Structure formats: structure tokens, C-alpha cells
Image 1: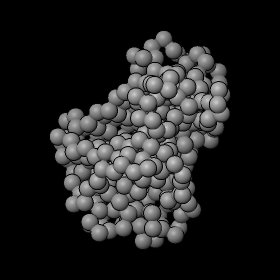
Image 2: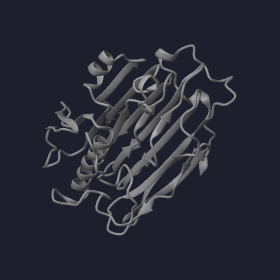
Image 3: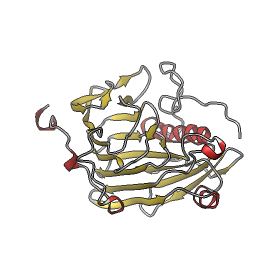
Length: 314
């Protein structure tokens, strides 16, 4: 494991200006964990290289499924979600020629904050000719939660990346006890650089709880929103904008030539559509414009929020 097998400490986690003064060092129940992951190419397969994992985060060995060009790596949180003061650091390096989907096995549940905040922070490096898809999982902020999500991505000149984020309104809806849009504060900070040059940044701060008017302004009357950043060779077939009964999808071409897709709509519907668009685009990179999407047609995976097309209602 070499130098990568080093314990992850709270000192490695950054605190944004919005949460200055909220310190979790004395929080006895707070956990600091994460993983340092290297993905390497072995023959035609993507496997784990050096790896370090720290409770409560655990890794499943990459699944290599017959007929699939990529490997599937699950990140697992052994607890019920991110508690007040919890911090996870994910360091991920995709070596040259690797093909992989990295995702959580379930949604990220952000529990109420009493004195601090929860955070998940990513440091990702993608080498030339690697194709990496990262879908951290839908985030569900509970009432009174404070959450900071940060990601820094370094792309080599010929690296390919797809990154998706999904934000749900809250835990449930029970009239006056509803936890929809009842979080305290959410800060998202994502940056991607190619060969050292900044090509994309997405940062926002949401201060809750939201009124019905606030929710309509930010979410457009929907219960979920999502975004997908696609960086690499421009696909021949680009997803189109869509405005249907279950969700609205917009497509933006960036100055860098990359793509940004955004959704608002039904949580189940936009989760399924984001996964389908991400894995179809990845399929064109590894197999051409008429190639099958990664994993969606596989018979080796049980249906879940990523690998199925559920029936949803309005």
C-alpha cells in the first residue's frame, strides 16, 4: 500500500467560509473516514491498485461483468448516513486506460446538525485515455442538516470524465411535519481542471429552511434537481433538452467544448434519466455512437436506482 495507507484525519478536510466556527473536533460521535483508491488496468479489465479504506467507508472489489467494457466500484457507508460532524474524504486516481463507474450503493442521508456540519470531499485524478463516471448518489438533507460537498478533479489532456449530482427536497412529506426543504444550509463546491486549466466550476449555497416561495424559486416547483458534467471528446449524439410531465432537462455546451446537463422534476424520474444519459454517453466513448450504454443492458445486476427504469407517477 505504500504511502497511500495513511490514516485520514480531520485536518485534511476543509471548512468553507459558510461554516467557519463550527468545529467537530470535540464531537465524540463524529466519525472521520473515507478511502484512497487507485484504479489500474490489468489486461482488458479495470482493477484496484493500491487501496486504503477507513471506517465508516468500505469498498466492494470492482465488479467485472461479462460483456461490459467497464468495471463497477461501489462505495459503502456502514452507518445510517452522514451525522453531525462526520467527514468523509475520497481520493480517487484513475490510471491510464481504465474504464470504471464509481458510485454509492444508496442515497446520501444527511442527518440534523446540532453544533457542527457534515461533509463529503473528493480529490479525483484522471489520467490520459481513462474513462471515469462518478455518481456519488442522491443527497437527502434532513431537517436542520448542514452539509458541505466539495470535489476537485484534475484531468489529463486525453482524460474523460462524467460526474453527476442529485439533490432531493428532503426525507418525507407529512403535512406540518414535512421535512422537505427544511435543511439549515447546503454548500456545494465542484471544480474540474484539464492540464491545470479551470474548465468548469459549480458552487452554490442554499440557506434553509425554505418557504413554498423559496422552493418554487430554486427548484421550479419540483422535488429534486440534478446536474451532469461531461468532459471529453464531444459525442456524436448529444442528449436533447426535454420538458415532459415528470421532469425537465436542459443541455448546455460550455466554452471548453464540454457538456452540462441539468434537471428538475420527480426524484425517481430524474435519477433514472441522469443514470441513463451518463451511461449512454460513456458507452459512446468506449464503443462508438451506436454502442450499448454501460451496465443498463446487463443481466448481472439487480435493479436499483441506477440500473433500472422504474415506473413513476407525477
